[in-house]
Length: 86
Length: 236
Image (tube, rainbow over all chains, first blue to last red; front, side, top):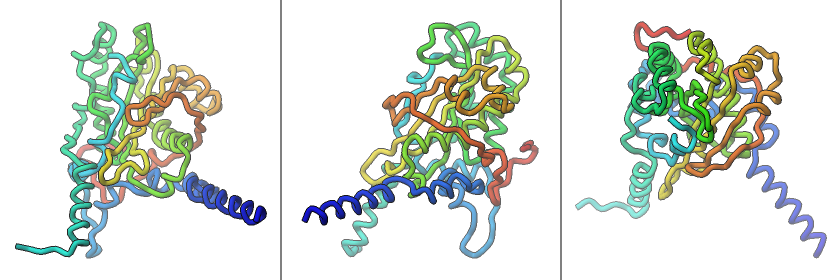
């Protein structure tokens, strides 16, 4: 019984380590990858290609318009007064 | 009256909740909006720096806006503020950047210190390098150093029914140390030991966290596919 509990704890720990944290392979991949954004997931990617295979040009205005529909403008963020004095 | 299957209705409600939670009328920040307004400076030195270097700041802001569309400057986030705890009038050339970071399982799996290290290595160092290339400002004796502030979406917080949270990393460094580090005359470890930096989780101050800095040329080499800078924009 004890042996089973120990084994279960060990396996649970392995699962926790490999799911809650990046594995060394994931980390190496992230660190070595210079061709994508920090996560590889970025608002601009949704603007890039149409399903018909055409590649529309994207302007800065398009990017700003897309941002208005995304997270960053409304997320809870530290206020400048918590970092700076004017 | 239209009738919807409960699952469809649930999906629609979920989508609406998500949109209401994480979207909003965030106004676009023009290159000029990114500059800290002169009237907000509280000392003569601050006002003077903002006035004397306004043209260069605006050009710098335009370069970010036109050439680095994956980044945004915080409204009023480009200027010469002081550190919050400072008792002197030491002014820092500072840029506050939002990194357009979406939910991603690999990034989410990184421990907090790794996320900070990765963001600073990828975006913070390059922004400091770009700021250090502004000669008139760097040679101004009234500028004590440089500062970069990075904000990004905290993984797992952009979900229905919850308020999205940004993690924010703020760093201050004196000019000599920065120049030595950028010229590789100083190790990253020495640089981080001399820098003053703080992490915030939303509005909560986390404090100093152990970070590692490594080479990452992404921000200086990446070219977004299909992106077209405005005509006349000089993107090196």
